[in-house]
Length: 99
Image 1 (spheres, rainbow, N blue to C red):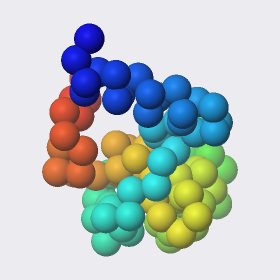
Image 2: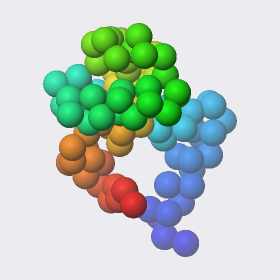
Image 3: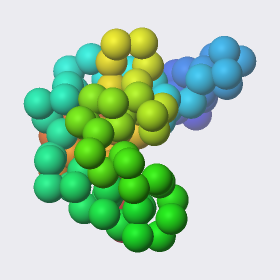
Image 4: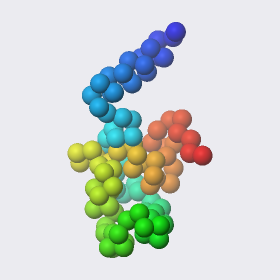
């Protein structure tokens, strides 16, 4: 087993011990200005249409929406926020592929 793989396994083990997951890790370089507003609007319309969010959320600014969706870790957006609302996730994380 190579060193890189052992390091990844150790990192995963330690994260699980702390109750952390990759998607909830803060991503300090990713901020509200990096969120694609058109993706947010599409999400709001789709989620409201499907009954997943209350229609009152349609008027919420994106910072409030991120809080309500639990996509903040402290004062930082999370990896999940980046995957959901970034136009180019690979800019922020190497090897990200969305199917």
